[in-house]
Image 1 (cartoon, helix red, strand yellow):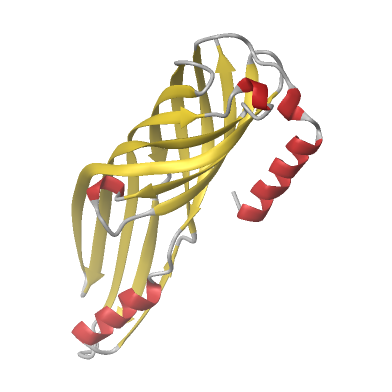
Image 2 (image 1 turned 90 degrees about the vertical axis):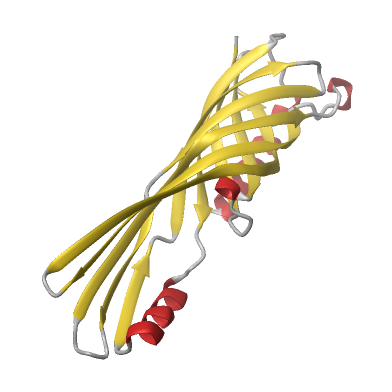
Length: 215
C-alpha cells in the first residue's frame, strides 16, 4: 500500500467519528492483514559489481515492492496493553540480470527471495477515558527466516543454488483500529522492522491494512 493511500484511508476513518465507537468487552482477539514495503533499488550496485568482475556490460531489473500477509492473535491484559503473536509470510521478490562478459560470453542471472516467521509484540494504548483507546503503539521482537534461490545460465549451462538465513530482530510501529461493529475493526498500521532474519543491515517499513475480530 502506498503511503499516500494509507493517509487518505486514515483521514476518512477519523472524519467518520470512528474514535467514539464502542468495542466488545473481550479478552481475546484475532485477525489478518496485508501489507506492502518498498524495496531499495539495487540494480546499479549489482550490474557495477558484475562489470568490475567480468568486464563487458550488464543490465538488470527488479521488483519495486514486496507484499506480505500476516495472521495474528492477541490477549487484552488491560485497557492499555495487549499481548500479540503473529505469523508473517512475504511474496516472492527478485532480480533478473543479463550481460555479456569482456570475453564475449552472454549470461543471464536471476534470484528470488522470501521471508516468513513470527513476531511477539506488546500493543500499548491510551486509556479508554482519553477517547483515543483505538490508537496504539507497538514494540516487540521478530524471528524470521529468509530463503533465496538463484540461477546463472552461460554457454549453454545452467547452475542453481539455494541459501537461507534466520535470526531475531525488532519491530515497532503505530496504528489505529477503526470499529465496524461491537466485535470487528479495520486495522491500519505502519511497522518498522530492523535486523530482519538477524541481518543487521536488513530493515523495512511496512504499510498494512486488515481486520480484527474480538471473541
